[in-house]
Amino acid sequence: MKYTHILFDADETLLDFSQAEAFALSEALKHEGITCTDEVAQAYKSINKQLWTEYEQGEIGQDKLRTERFERLFRELDLAVGCGVGPFSGLYTQFLGKASFLVEGAASVCRDLIDSGLRLAIITNGIKEVQMSRIQGSELTGCFEAIVVSEETGYHKPERGIFDYAFDKLRLTDKTRVLIVGDSLSSDIRGGVDYGIDTCWFNPRQLPNASGVRPTYEIQRLGQIRGLVAGA
Image (cartoon, rainbow, N blue to C red):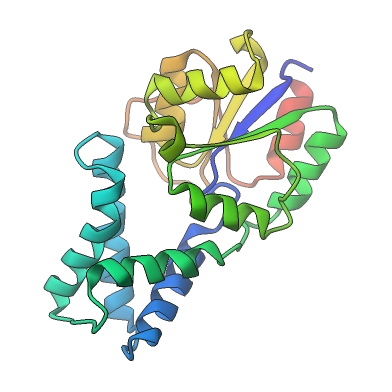
């Protein structure tokens, strides 16, 4: 077997972030007596996605991102929460940490890979308390030798620093034996390519790739990883 270690992205690769995001926003708004309509949910999703892109590009810090997304949302839709934006952000984070929804097949694939002798880790851009809570509250708990979260490293994908941190933590030296699997061309795949490790783009919606970033592999279902690593 070519690979000894697989570095998984978390959100939209193993964890269903869209479902988690919708749950957390709905529960936080409900707490403040506001109904989470489709308009509110779509506006937040768009704003949050844009801010995480800005974060990846180094244009905004994570602390600012936590509140800025709600500042923009409430301003755009002319909403007001009694508790204030800061406390609302904290409320949303609490609910998000409880949202341990998984992408279909994630748990069984991880267990099968471990049974095959592969060692797994997570490398994710996100808030440490949220990511750890979601992973530990799911069927994925205990599957990973390390969970590397951007907040604790001072770097985020696609920056080289977060990969250095992961390699140091896992005591890895041979890049040819490591594969990263993720849904984001701009962070997971770009980061892996720049770092010199093989990459696997998880593309369940079969989106076109106009980024110029070329993954080593592309899959539409997580279960395809089994055959991919067995044949590598």
